[in-house]
Amino acid sequence: MIGTCRLDALRRLCALALLPLGFAACASSGDPGPLPPGVIRSSLPPVPSVTGPLSLYVEYPDSLQRISARDSNFVFGTVGTGDATLIIDGEFVEVEPNGAFLAWLPVPAAASGDTASYRLVARRGAETDSIAHPILLPAQTGSPWEAGALLDADRLGVRAERWAWPDEPMSVEIRANPGAEVEIVAGRTTIPLAPASGDVRVLTMSAEELYRTACVPEDCNWSDTADSLRLEVRARMGEQRQNEPLILPLRILDPIAPPVARLTDEPDEINGNDGMVVARPAAFGPYRWRFPDGTRAIVDLRVGDRIRLRLAPDLHAWVTLEDVELLPASTPIPRSAVGDLRFEPRGDRVMLDIRLAAALPLEVTQPDLRTLEIVLFGATAVTNRISLGPSPRVIESVEWSQLPGSRMRMRVRFEGPVWGWRARYDERTGGRATLRLELRNAPEIDPARPLAGRRIAIDPGHPGAGATGPTGYYEGDANLAIGRILERILTERGAMPILIRNDREQMGLYERTNAAEEAGAELFVSIHNNALPDGVRPFGREGTSTYYFHPHAAGLASAIQDGMLATMRLRDLGVFWGDLAVCRMSWMPAVLTEGAFMMMPKHEAALRDPGFQELYARGVADGIEAFLARTATGAGGE
Image (tube, rainbow, N blue to C red):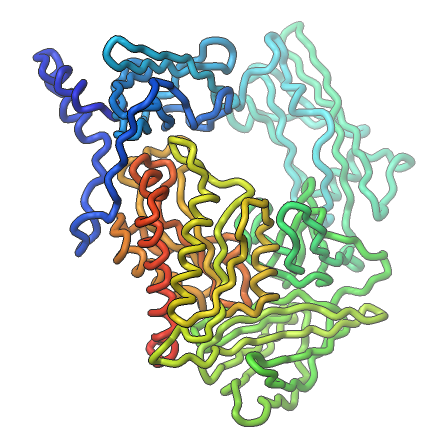
């Protein structure tokens, strides 16, 4: 694969008749491709010229950093001066006028174990600087086990703890030499295993069958704790024999009285807390639900540190073990009737208190810009009356329906656009709880001056974490510089901005969103700049993008994306729905911008430039103003 090429070296190389294809390959390697329709050129300022000592430095990957790319990867850093020539592993790499470089190169071969090195040579006239930059190659997976062994003993031993219903199918995979005869001894039963594929053998049976087969009656109890089932795996091939222990901690759940868990948002010293427990549709899938702290739910499966909750007969949610507090065995299954409801307007929101026999799992979705759909799992509606509140009303209509699986659904239609919502439980003695729902209506916006009086949270992303550019410019510093300019611009246009971070102190993700809520913010914009993961070719993928999570923030994301494109004129990477922590805040429209790419030398240089920082901030401000203007005139659509 061809890396980027310095043009003066390129001309010398490509003039050779022996390299007729080199020019086309090298000349196109750094070409960003066509710009979006309507954009003639970017607003990137020229990279400033730097003349200094010849000094090679690799910013990424770090020395002895383990990379995840196996074929090709990017390398970036600086040679300290813009008038040098750089070669990495025999390939010419373009050096920017400020000395920065970004290369896309084959991953070097291992020199010793999993250690490899990039060889960098920089020259300026008779001056030379060279380094061997060591990295760690990707960890090997599926490596052969000990030579001569019949069984992969490292994958036996003690397995992750399982909780399962009696009829839950369970599979145990065993890696063995393809030519070996393999059997499992469980209690007094011997079970031969036929090859499933390659070197994998699989034992499959129901949880109850496995439990009863492996347990000698006097050693196991059908109890509230997991029993360690002790099995033995035996393999033989000719005269060779190998026996290995296999321990399976297993608990059989009682279908009549399943365990009940209380979900708790455990203290997080790094990110803070938002009073919600996030849950996934699969054990390691993306986040899908946000359950208020204190929610109670049926536990119906455990695999290691992952707990599966039953929301309805055909619907499950996964949480981590640390989010779960198991309640006493006598705790009833969370169920409740829902009686009459009353919506009470209170300033910029409408309050709805629902008294329940237990803190039921809750889901809030937004079918359109004026409607919230609220589903209570384990609820039965006995609702005869719903008060929409006095005039002027915020709520246009409410309807409810009873769904299969003990689910109550309410559809709340607003007079104007939904601005946000949040939920929490007030728990009472005896397990009873009051669900407190706050439904936020849009602020009063002056169409002539949409930003006037609007409280807008500006969150300069990072630290912690964050990307750095080839010359070491830190993303958190770039974000803060842009955030301060955005604060000034919004103030000049009549807004009341709230700068969430104004120094280099680390700040947790939920600390940021909590600060916005506590300050009474009406919009939340998190400022960032992008980077790419290992193994992704960077050239042609740089540009501008914006992220949102909740539907009521999509319009804000699109408006800000358009604003940034109009001022910075970079490639339009688009607007994305993204499962990002700060965007999951539901109390106000919240978005995250990725204006430019820290890892691209030209972008990094531009992000250091106050004029380009002004363009970034102005694009965001223009987008916010356009979104509010559309909201004020009712042009936001459904």
